[in-house]
Every structure is written in structure tokens, then in C-alpha cells.
Length: 259
Image 1 (tube, rainbow, N blue to C red):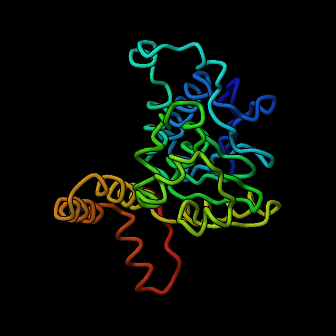
Image 2: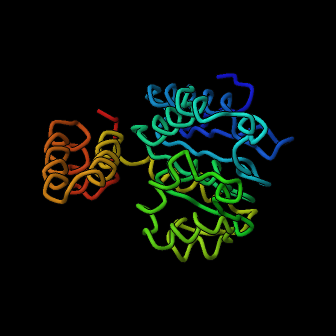
């Protein structure tokens, strides 16, 4: 896969999507969103890919949206325009595979919102997070007001959104914005190790487990429990379920085939 603003690499069943606009600190524009959506759709359909890492490299994740593209927009332009970020983020968030964000340096505005669509976030110790849109007279418009409160709670999310202030990696860990903080030089090794661990599990079970969590968060508890049971039941029609339980009883590692 060849793109202009991102790089996609696949190795040993792990796909890595790297934002590639270093001259503007990986600022996100419609072209980036379009290519992210296309890459995510292609990787979703590629059965050889078992997990996905998204990163901006070892200096910066993404310093926000491309303001030069937004500055002259009118309310009508925004309301009726092509909502490229929404589509791209929906595809990434609902991928039937685990998605890990490996975050170094700034993850601001749309960059921070992009991390929120990942299933797991690993931050380098030099990472900083923030939603500074309020300082521009706008609000986070790529899911920040919806995904962030669901992740860290409404109170802390409102503090970050209303102030526009940045937080460092250690505070991001303490409020639950990231799962883990590691030394910057260990970021990609840690992300790949986690991706490999996820990839060693049954692909269908991973897909349905992810769906059960994501869909359940949109339901009340009783509906979520019913949906979970449906997903649980479906897995008993898979070869992986038979192999997993047989391997457990035979005291050997399971060899999942994604079937």
C-alpha cells in the first residue's frame, strides 16, 4: 500500500501505520483522514494482519489538525462538508483487530482524538496530550467530547476540554488516558510486543471481544449482557474454540487458525 501522508508496513502479521508529515508535525488534514480510512479498511480485510499499531514516529504523534485548512471555513462549510475525520475514525475504531496507539511527543487536538479510537494506548515518557481547540474558539470536533469522557470520566474530560491545557505522560497514565508509559527508546518495542501477544490469540475471539466491549458501551447493562452472551455463543461454532479448549486440556499452547 502506497500513500502520500502515511506509511503502512506489515511484518509478521503486525501492521504499522505511521503518520508521515514531519514538516508540519504530522498535522491532520482531509488527505490524511482519507488515507487513514483507506488503510484501515484494507487492513481490516487482510486476514494475514492480526493486529495494528498506529504511530507518528519517535518525535511527535500528531500536533493537531491543519489549521490552515480550517481557518477560512464557514459554519455552512463545516456542517455540509465532507466529514473525513469521522469516517476514518469510525473505520479505525471498529476494525475487527486490536489497534494499539504508540505515542511519542505531542498528541494534541485531532492527534489526541486519533489516539482515542485505538483499543490500547502506550505512551513514551516524553508524550504530551491535550485538546487545545477551546483556545481557538472551537471545541474538539473529531470525537473528543464523546470518546474522552467515556474513557476517563466526565469531570476530568471537561477540565481538559474547557482549559485546553496539556498533560504529560505520567498524568495521562494516572487518569486512564493511556494504558502504559515507557521510556521513549522502548516505545516501539513495547508496542510490537503487545501487538504480538494480542496476535497470538484467536482472531475471531478477539474480533467478538472487541465488538462486545465497544457495542456494550453504547447499550444499557442488560442489553450489553445479552449482546455479550450472543458473541460468546457464536464462538462455540469456531475451530479456534475447539483448539483452544483442547490445548488447555492437553497442557500445550493453542495453535489458532482464525477459523
